[in-house]
Image (cartoon, rainbow, N blue to C red):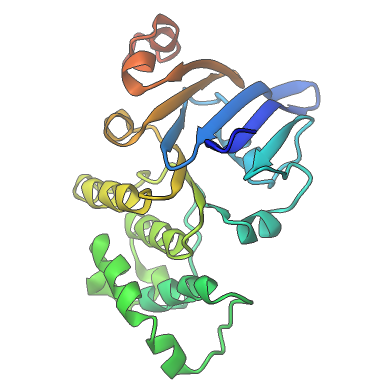
Length: 251
């Protein structure tokens, strides 16, 4: 595996009772880039994400992260290695405040286990960075509100912030713009772009304007297989991609 690439999948396949959700996928994610995984509904994007983050075991193929094979590993182990993901469904601690959610994530930089019982004065040391992240997505108004009380879109923004707060080397984002209001998209895009400086992002996203602005490389899946790959201009003008998206309505 070249040092230029932080994540590489070769011949990656996942079969469910004779049906291939992902088949013979080769994928290379260049270090310090923003890479998009796109495709029509049912293309296998989420299954591919689950394989790359070891939430699913592949039927065949290999996954290499930073030079280490990880396809037989588990999500907690690869997260400690610096590969962290978000989910389509918001995953935050509902009874904890917005500030508390972000502070818990910031503890990862200190090493060891997450300690919910740490002294309040120790956690207060994390406030400055937590506030910076919270303000970046416009959630400061809800600083002390329970996360459960947030709207769906704001929960998604909070989840993105808590994922970024862990400062992984590679972050996989599963539809980060889903559920966001139009006014929230630019701040979240700016946060992703800022985070990506010196790090790597792999994202599934349906908003093609976001893909066009943010992403260096795009891989298109259809029926579980790689259909096309290149920068946005290349894939958006590829006749196969246009046909897959029913006349280009989404490209």
